[in-house]
Length: 445
Ligand SMILES: Cc1cc2nc3c(=O)[nH]c(=O)nc-3n(C[C@H](O)[C@H](O)[C@H](O)COP(=O)(O)OP(=O)(O)OC[C@H]3O[C@@H](n4cnc5c(N)ncnc54)[C@H](O)[C@@H]3O)c2cc1C
Ligand SMILES: NC(=O)c1ccc[n+]([C@@H]2O[C@H](COP(=O)([O-])OP(=O)(O)OC[C@H]3O[C@@H](n4cnc5c(N)ncnc54)[C@H](O)[C@@H]3O)[C@@H](O)[C@H]2O)c1
Image 1: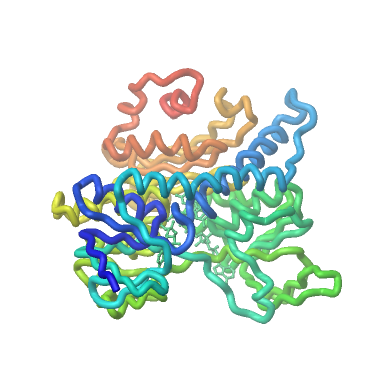
Image 2: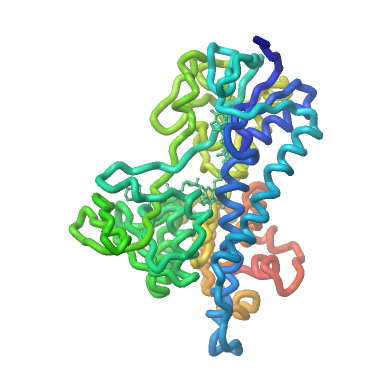
């Protein structure tokens, strides 16, 4: 039996783990990274990137539809299996690229399920050999939440969706968060009858609810059926092969596929954390202001960690780079996050950063609420655009929410303005190419 020795061990090769591994290596550490499934983790293999590839075709159709009777006649059809093949070509290239990057950087790697055997040593899969590291970084991400009811075995998850070979006639999503709203936009545009069943009275609770209402109305008008204040309590298979879904409010309908999009839970329950002295809670791993767990040589970053920021690629990357600095002794400062944007890619995109409009109003700040649908950059596509900006008592931009086809680009201007503590007038002093998103931002108000 061999005991391998490293200075830094990283468990999980998603965005957060890879960021930690590359940053630690660049700071001169001897690094090993362990992965049990797909190198690159959720985002490029069965998350953000494949989703955006499917959305590229979907958004193209939506743009064409918006211009019907406005100079464009007729629109394209989506061939789902071709689109999935196109997506898969991207995904297939991820593994070799990630492995090549690790090898070129001189980062050691092992493949298999990692679990602790004591406070500084890990076993990978069934290997007898063990890996010891002075510091460990847990970056094991999350997996889709499953639900438990009679017939729940018929449900599928987000990864199944992104690999679905054919588009069924009728699709149901349980949960109206990021994933449910984005996937429902895809199935609806491709032509499937689409239903969203969700607890509570609204969707996308993290977002500006005025803009969410606008989005939900648009999704309903495009044919998506909402079932609020309900969940699925039973699924049976009919003789036809279709799924008979029963809701807690008594509604019953037939559908072809049911996807659970009801949140995600941390991957830390099968890692023998007790042996490492790492405490966990139901959803994630509690961390201190240096992202240390209850074992001061074990850190948790990215989706699996209990830090108070949205669980997204940019925050995971940021945390991974930060812990490398802490481990290498380059900083002892508590982690401090820059302004973080969130975005949902629904039938319109909603993006948000900084203070919410509701919080801004409570603080007595000024809120500018603008319908920008008639400015040239948005009018040409017949986009419905609304921008809500929060200004503090010094007229500095402290928050923004945007609904627009390019909300994820518009919000970046506000992220920069907030991070640099710019007033509205200062941001408008820049010259941006005209016409462009930047020029609309600069002339905003
Ligand atoms: C459908 C979908 C769409 C999304 N879209 C976006 C988006 O548009 N923008 C955005 O910012 N975020 C998006 N996200 C979220 C984003 O994917 C995650 O925030 C990000 O991947 C988290 O990175 P991570 O490194 O913390 O975890 P992950 O990417 O989940 O990586 C964790 C890795 O650890 C491995 N692992 C787990 N346990 C072990 C173990 N015991 N031993 C060895 N390896 C292990 C896993 O196999 C995995 O590869 C999306 C997520 C989903 C599901
Ligand atoms: N664009 C993006 O950045 C993006 C896209 C997808 C996913 N993500 C990440 O993935 C995470 C998970 O996304 P998600 O959409 O799965 O979760 P979510 O937390 O965003 O939404 C979960 C939804 O499911 C509902 N729900 C929960 N339990 C339910 C039940 N039993 N029955 C009916 N409804 C139920 C909730 O009310 C909520 O509407 C996000 O928080 C985010 O971190 C980000």
